[in-house]
Length: 476
Ligand code: NAD
Image (cartoon, rainbow, N blue to C red; front, side, top):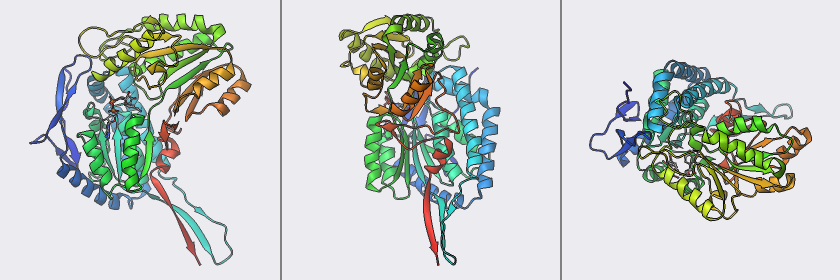
């Protein structure tokens, strides 16, 4: 028997349940059934959360770093203890496989452990001055943070949004996705159970535009942290600009994968196919445009299509399943339109290209090749289980295609040539690059993009730095 919890918001340390509030149904993407309803915040709820965040910030900024570290470490321990329960909840409401949601719990626990160490190393510096003068630079928490986390990583997105402000000494109001509220609440609960005061981190849900307008209009909030589409990110940046709030924006991508003729193509195929269809492709760093040198193109398309067609798709709770459903009914529709548009413009469909069954939100792993540049899917973030494979003559043409779009989040390259590896590292316009690997994220490495993929980074020392401001003090 799988237990899905009763949903609430967490405001000022209290569970706030439905009462007379409006609500949003949470669906199981594998069946389409309603799991529960999540309460939506009223303006009064948000004002209460803001007042608590202001109070929580005054308290937390003065809390010794060792105590903040102890909370993060305690939460990491609790998450690891609760991994099975939390992973099942996340799979139920988001759809991805249990192996993936277990991995997310692990990722959040590792990130909290890393931040626990990092928050004790937020050093300032002493400047060189003549005797009798002293100038120092110190770092201080920026203030209460409004953080918005999407549904595609129901645990690690909230983990990132909560962990960095808490490490830095900020308070945070998290609005996680209404589609995956129980996962976000589970991450927050681990922090609260580890001793975090209830006014330091809170969780609200609501009509997204109303919540973001309300929170960002408040002078209490000093920073916006958003993960989601470039379009919504641009809208929120405008709202944040009114009050000159600081921002961390983790936005869309259209990940290029450059496969050169000197690459180990079998290894590239094995690793990239798994990476492509992870979370049904609903990943901001998903590899989407496979830019393959023409001499190895045919074999690459065949190998990719064979592997994609063999992927077992089904309910993420089934241990044999490799790819779960898409997260909500909007996604298969959007992907189907993009695939049909590409085929109508002359692309070749090798496998997939259709929904699976009439229950839940399943879409078959799909491979397209020879996709023309004017197809929507070549220009807009696909965010689904579709690989686009096109052929190119040489390195120059491949780099040009990789850099063609305004996005720059993650890029991948497969080549054994060391000189080329260095050229790619210099030439590709991207926030993250992996060469002969798919390991694009780690607790100690900055995760973020350039150009339309956003600015600022999460994870790494950069994640904590983004929640700090500097103060220069000159003494005579
Ligand atoms: P969407 O763009 O409406 O929503 C994306 C996320 O932003 C959701 O979590 C949503 O709750 C939130 N959001 C939307 N409007 C908001 C607002 N005014 N204020 C605050 N938060 C707001 O659409 P969607 O259908 O959920 O996803 C569509 C596209 O979003 C995808 O195709 C993908 O490009 C992008 N997306 C990106 C990520 C990522 O990790 N970068 C995650 C989810 C979705």
